[in-house]
Each structure stands twice: as structure tokens, then as C-alpha cells.
Length: 266
Length: 215
Ligand SMILES: Nc1ncnc2c1ncn2[C@@H]1O[C@H](COP(=O)(O)OP(=O)(O)OP(=O)(O)O)[C@@H](O)[C@H]1O
Ligand SMILES: [Mg+2]
Image 1: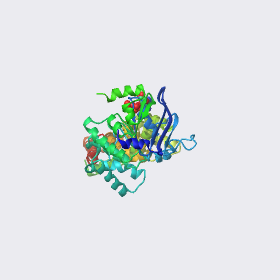
Image 2 (image 1 turned 180 degrees about the vertical axis):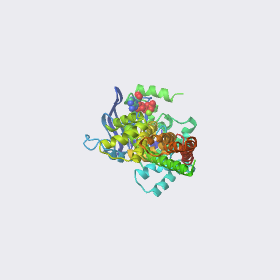
Image 3 (image 1 turned 90 degrees about the horizontal axis):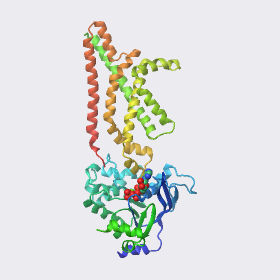
Image 4 (image 1 turned 45 degrees about the vertical axis):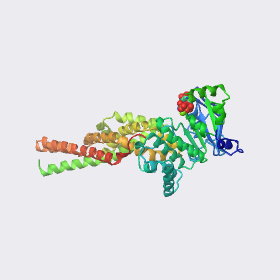
């Protein structure tokens, strides 16, 4: 597709921000993740595709350690998440919080805090978790709101916003943590079709500005145009992984071809 | 009704109000503490809280009051009538408040809590900054309802000789052989008290209620 995308893909090995290897997770008797390995290099946008129930959300939750995987490791900039060095002793809440602070998550259903205004939503964690100076955080939050086109909604409550506006606030809230990695779990799936574009536009510009992003999405257009790498999951496994041109133009596996027929055709 | 009689009624009203307020001030946070223990499924303490709630919910206030006033000294704890009265109301209302807080907690959005967690917020910080500011608003109507029930059931403490409003009214009626006027005044005072609480609730909801609605 675009030259820049292939350039960044072929560039000399970049330090991985996120390294998932051999991740396994079972709920009751159901194997939801079955040895998933995945790497996101600095500045990369990786799109994670897959049918419903394939384990995409569970994978993101394991990265946040909201879900404890049964096996495998997750490294953030080389640091093990959830386990102390040595891999035997689980991390305490404070240690986990330190790592979680370095990732920003954007949720399908926004998960904004309804009793706080837009600005308060954005500054909550930087002020109370990262303990940064309030005035400084507010100035940054205002700049972020400007970037996502919501400067005039600074003092509005989330209930007054459209879905697209809520999600842009959700993105600004994640960015306010100055995260090394952004995680998106179907950020446009809960939106009315006409509101998807405004959120996708913000995500694209983040990707172009060099953010490191792992994006679970059904927006094939976004994946095709923006991703440095596309990963297809099915039944808890990575079934195909590659650059967007190969993935969309010439998928190697039968499973990927079926998936693309269902989601891209029409 | 003489001025003296009226004053002793007012005195009774004062006792009812102060004992009730003390019971509420202790019982509402205690109920929240019980609810948190159960909600967080704290080992050992959560089942204890469950037992506490079912025991207290099935014990009439009068019985509880007598139990506290006469049983505590037996195990070596001296307690005066007024303290026993406050303890009765607090322990009783805490059981009901626990259920109110707990249902608020159980209905609280998991998504919001999860968002707080992914942003590195600790449990206590999440409770203080995210949960509680919304929880008290949703629980307020039920809590105020329970407060009005407490005020009305506070007459149970008369059984250990505390001169609260109903007891004062009965005594005046017995002295004057005309029970109706003091009873009417007592009833009027209860109604005013309850109306004040409901009015305070409405006022609070108007001032703090703007942030409602789902995100
Ligand atoms: N806490 C849980 N307990 C039991 N089963 C779970 C739990 N969380 C997820 N699952 C199951 O794991 C499987 C994968 O779920 P997951 O949410 O990760 O899929 P997904 O790829 O994100 O799907 P979708 O596109 O619908 O969001 C599903 O079958 C789901 O029912
Ligand atoms: Mg999902």
C-alpha cells in the first residue's frame, strides 16, 4: 500500500515495546488463548483481527494483567508484567500499577467516569496515580482535547456527548498518561456508523505521529491503510500474521481467506 | 396542656433527634464497612458480616435494646441508658444500611472499575475517587428512607427508660388524664422530623445530582 508503511516494516529491528510469548489462558474447560505470541515494535501499529470469541479481548486483558494467563510471558519494554524477575513470585498491586500506568487502554464502551467532566476524566489518573502537577496536567489535557477536536467540551459531562465524542475523550484520557503503548479494544464497534470516521481519523493521526499501538478492530479500512502489521486470531491462536498488503491482497492461509471474505466483501 | 408539659415534650423530641442522629452517624458508615467486607469477599470477615446482618435484621429494636442494656453489664461492660439507646439504633440500622450499600456496590459498573484498574488506580483510590462519589448518590434515597424508619422506630429505646418523645407524651397524658393533645404534638414532631430528612435529601439531590446518566 503506502511506501511509509513498508519502510517502517522493513526498517532495522526496532526495540519491541510489547512482547507476548506463548500465552495460554483457559476459562473452566475452554481454551481461550492457546500459545499466542505477538510483538509490537516501537512506533508500530499492529491490528489484531479475528472473529467473535477468538480471544482478542482476553489477550488485551492479559497484557493489562486484568486476567492472569496460565502460561507464557508478557514483556513491556523488556520488563515482565505480572511476575517479579525470576517468574515465580507474582507482582503486588503497587508494582502492577506502575506497569499499567505505562499503557493506555481505550475501551469498546468508552468506560468514562460519568461523575467527572471531560477534563476531570482526562486528568484523574495523571494527577492521582502518576502524581504529576495538576496545572501541568491540565495544560496538557487541554492540548489533547484540542487535538481530538473537543476543546469546547472541556467541562461537559460524558452523558452529554455523542458516542464518537466519548471515544475521543477516551483516547485523550489514555494519551494523558503519556503511555509507551496504546491498547484499543474495538474502539469503534459501539459507534453509530456515521461516527466511526471521526474516531478512526484520530487513531490514524496517532499512528502517523509514531505512537505504538495494538488495535483490536473490525475496521478493515483502518487496518489496511494504517497497520504496519496485521495479526489474525482464531480459536485462541494466531493463524496469520503479516503486512497489510500481503494479508489483504494475498493471504497465505485458508482461514484468513475465509475471514476476509466475510468481513471485507460487499 | 401546660407549658411545662409542652417543654418536656420538646425535651423528648430533643432526645429522639439526638439519639437518632447519633445512631445514623454511626450506623451509616458501619453499614458501609459491612457492605465493603461482603462485596470484597474478605475471608472470615465477610461471612461474619452476613451473619451479623441476618441476626440484626430479625431482632426487634426493643429486644435488641433490652439485650444491650441488661446483657452487657452481665459480661462486665457497664453502659448507661443513653449509650445503649444509641448503640441499639446504630447496630440495627447498620444491618439495613449494609444491604443498601451492598446492592449499590453490586450494581456498580464493572467497566468503570476496570478502567480505573487499567489506569493504575489502587483499590482504595478507586473507591474514593470513582465508586463512592457515585455510590452515595444512588444509595441516598434508600438511606434516607431507612433514616426515617429509624426515627420512627427510635421509640423502642423508651423500654430502658430513655425519655424520648413518645414516652414523654405518654407520661404527660397519664398526668393530665388527657392523652390526645400530647400524642398529637408528638405525632406532629415526628412528621416534621421526617419531612426535614426528605427535604434535605431532595436538596442534596438537586445540588449534587447533575452528573447523572451513564457514560
Ligand atoms: N471471564 C470469563 N469467564 C469465562 N469465559 C470467558 C471469560 N472471558 C472471556 N471468556 C470466553 O473466552 C472466549 C474469548 O473471549 P474474548 O472476549 O477474548 O473474545 P473476542 O475475540 O474479544 O470476541 P469479540 O469480538 O466478541 O469481542 C469467549 O468464548 C468468551 O466467552
Ligand atoms: Mg472482544
